[in-house]
Image 1 (cartoon, rainbow, N blue to C red):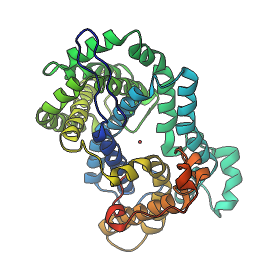
Image 2 (image 1 turned 180 degrees about the vertical axis):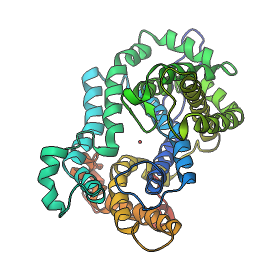
Image 3 (image 1 turned 60 degrees about the vertical axis):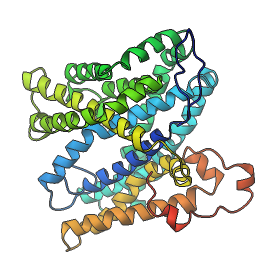
Image 4 (image 1 turned 120 degrees about the vertical axis):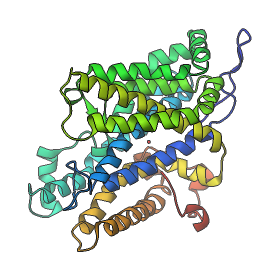
Length: 403
């Protein structure tokens, strides 16, 4: 996560003074958690592309807990990234960069491995019988997945980036004083919790079932969280306040998210507009924001440093995310029907999938500029592109985390 010194105006301290390594670490760890989350979906209650014959209530509880804060963390980090991207060029350059980074990988997935995911879903749900190549015409004419399956996050983030660009550009230009005043106010003790209010309202006032949504939240909440991430990194004093509040944010977040699982997480969702719906989603939104603040606070405290491993992992985050669900489903398709304990199935699916994703990334994507372009990566430096790329030594590549 790039940052730079911004000169003080009217005696105000600089907004950002160094690279925010902790956000790089959190991005990597969040995508690893997405892998763990999706690996558990073979065994939870909800319908998914490929399912284990038996599901477990405690896995469902874990899934509901993860959806409360995991995608919110990713959208906040994405908003923080936008803070440093805005102002490096005009609107045209900004949109072009985001299209290359987000839409190109989405289109590649649409026309390639998304079809594998849909094929396995149709196969395991009794909706198709035959080979993958026999299914392909059906995919392109009837089942084409323009959202890219799990890559919905990419097109939503692109849309948010374009929608928020005028406001963010104004904040970085003529609205600097306004942004500074907002940041300074939020840096006051406890004021950062006020950023939960829009999320609470957006969660309560829109019917989740009838509003565009995914991964536990409607898209209006995600839009606000993206802007909130932009605001959070606008002041070092605000980040320092979040760090100081980490031990308060963590227990409050865990308690509220746990309570929300009891209110709206399990069983039938309360009807929209009822007190049960309002209370459940309001508690969930506040708990989610507290969990986000705890993640940011602990990250800034303990992860604000760089290593060669972080540079390698951070570069591979997007390709890892793009590949992970397709690989998981292929591995899970073969494993879930084995006559072995279900816990052992999961202990096979997760590490085998991780290894295969890393092999594909290291030997198919990372070393070739054409593949890097298709996966939203920057090209290799000219000197590096002229010679074969060496794999990371085992001591540094043995546990790569990965949007």
